[in-house]
Image (cartoon, rainbow, N blue to C red; front, top):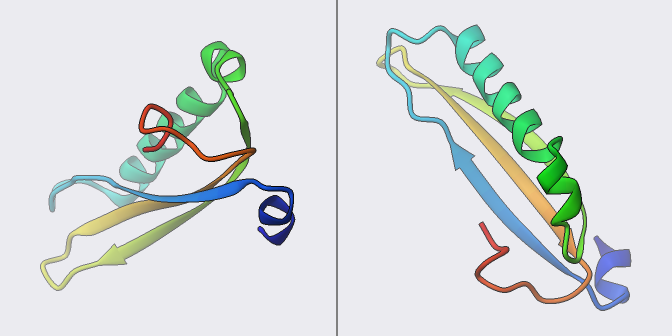
Length: 90
């Protein structure tokens, strides 16, 4: 992060939360989140439309409520070569 900032770049932090209910199994939710991330980041369009995106780091967090509901959150830090517009910011 320091190297990106030292080079004039910026960081953008986003959290994606998966909506689910008691009937969803954790494994199914995890698989869906993984498949969605691969579809977004691995597609041809993503490779063409980087437009200043240097890279990202993703952490997946799982919480469990007292009501026996799993919540899967993907926390992502994006590294950009310069300030980003609303079009690029999640």
